[in-house]
Amino acid sequence: MPMFVDTSPPGQCIFCKLVAGEIPAATIYEDALTIAFMDIGQVNPGHVLVATKRHAVTLLELTPAECAAVMQTAQRVAQAAEQAFGPDGITLFQANGAAGGQTVFHFHLHMLPRHVDDGMHLTWPRKEPGMAVLQAYADKLRTALAAQKTN
Image (cartoon, rainbow, N blue to C red; front, side):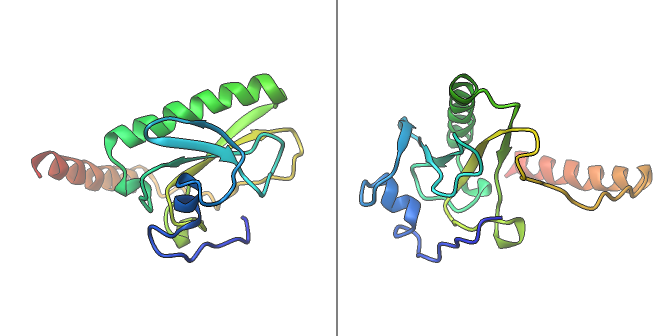
């Protein structure tokens, strides 16, 4: 994971400054809700960040329209990266909260062109709790989803 951590308050974060044009960026695309720009810490050529223009810290703070716009922008940028750089694959990465690996606390996702043996690894310990536990997890999530519909 990158070592850069932005500790600026909301409205003064590095991405808010970038959106406002207060700091330079190699912007490649923007629309009413999103902006896409080159990550200064390139993993591979074409590594782009897609961020919301409005300050929101995590995925949970986005509106449905912002969620849709971010994925539409990510798809457009991925298609451009495919054409421009010819990667072997593409990884989309998005982190929420420090424990999730978020280091800039303004919603964004990474569009990473990937190449065989590029040195980037995303691994985790695989746990197989069994079907009864998985069903219990599913029940909790279905209950939470049902509660969202009534609120």
